[in-house]
Figure 1: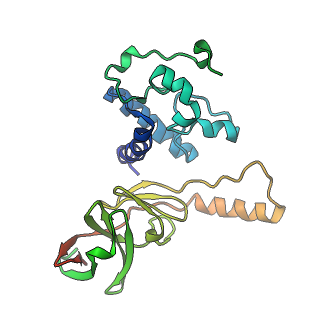
Figure 2: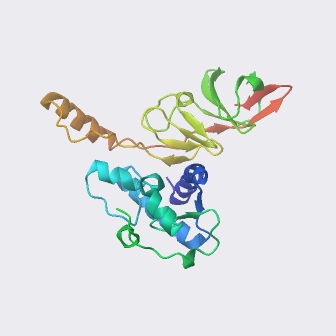
Figure 3: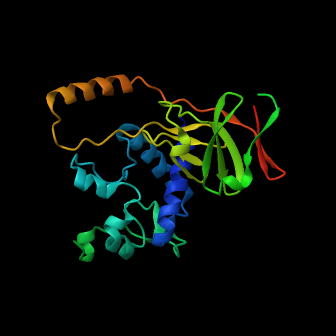
Length: 111
Length: 131
């Protein structure tokens, strides 16, 4: 199995899911490619494409909250940032993803 | 592969996003309708031979109903291997645990191979497949 093919498959599946939620892939193509590649590696290791930017805790109920795309589990937080935690997905209206800082949920009064 | 086309099914039998198993000259195939374009693939999963038409077709990607291995129906390429089952934190009874361990050991040696594809075309409302 080829990493590039799997990346394209994840792109296909994720695109179908995040669009109706008001998100899209980041316009930063290099970042998207890098993050998808990490997810392919995580999927090869664990069988699940976990978020590459959050820790796997070996606690299923918590780990299921970081399966990409994890937007539904962190909706309020990601909507406030207009991006997901990694930056793989951004709000549909975002054209300059570099302008969106990664802010912890606690810092914006969530959780 | 030769370009000897064989009449398979009526195109109207498979809606976009659908699949149908057929047997043509002794070969088990699945006809896939990807948004109006037809593709023909071998019926058996490249992992453990499950019938792929019982899985799901999302765009050009078919997911096996047995262990969720995925394949690109346009090329036959294996896109992912099986998804490991989640057994939870519950410890299985000893005999079942031993069996699962044995199966797990064997499964580690089962490779997911790409599957064969066949040229398909629509002519006179029928799907034709090259065997």
